[in-house]
Length: 508
Image (cartoon, rainbow, N blue to C red):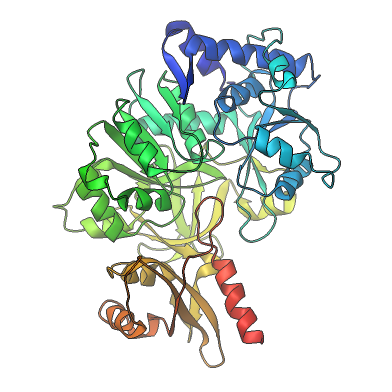
């Protein structure tokens, strides 16, 4: 079924309820639905787009984004939301690769994409212009149920190891993800609010779909993530949920006012996309109470592989509470997860292998990339490229990306295990461990350390910390103190950049 029809249902029942709010304005569900119908009509009539064709969205968090997204779907088209932090050339590459017929952009990004050296791009409609206002004057399209396996969202991966790939997500995939939200995270209704402090073109937008389908209030915060805006929103809105990358949650925890802030209206913080260290989770639980939900997912199975729910976070009396906090939780409702060896054979409990998953959330494949599709999808299972182990209770612990594992003297070293130890030191704000070539051992571990402002710690002190907690052969052989770690636009540490730095130094 076409996902945009969930909006039509809600708009009939709650036309006057707030749907989208932003600084200085808002849309009711009735007005939201009206805009979607007219945008769909303009895309079909004015722009002549045909069912199945793709429309790109080059948009920061803006009030026009959700109506544009649902308008694309109502017209029977597929959306290509692009990360607003990408360079214009990277966006141009995605526009060309996806063969988008049209691009809807916010002014700043529209200007960047109009650069003279970016030729061959599709027509770009910029919000606030006459062309965009014409989208709101189309003949209303009420919409048809459509096919559940029709493409809905082409999700381009972050591209940390090369050109990004476009994961084809269907209406079935996205509706399944919504149902999993209700089953595993929270029941939702018109009394609830989702705070969009993270990009709508990524995790926050994907979870916005579940809230729209139940008539919840979507509050869009302007600009980049700002803890002060989040705290202010908690004083204004009720039953507030939000998606946060771990770096965002850490910034919120480190905000000077967080200890005195009133968080009683906070319902849930869903975090995921990168490791969250146990020490930080304990601080978050002390400050907020058991209001955290950890997700493990990928663009290829959006936000929906395993999860650690609020009760598991809050069960401090459990003998394995800290181990559970360090895990990624258990398989989501209706999702199969296992750990396999290179030949696809399922491994015994506790053994490390590649994580594979199977569900109605797994992508159809990669757009125009049959080779990558064949590598990722095998016999109906998505091979994630992540390494992990599943214990006897079904909890999945992610060790690392397969490419990040260090092999030293024939022994496997998982950087996250070392990072978990390093981050417990009060002077350490962030840590990233990578391997570098060693003539005798094959590889050795190198730790990149970011210290808290005004704090100091010596390498010898960190070495002693590691020796007190992990096997000697795992400890870093070298410590590098840096001002910041390189990260991609979703806040993930770019370990490829750290390895490249080490390799370039070795080559000199």
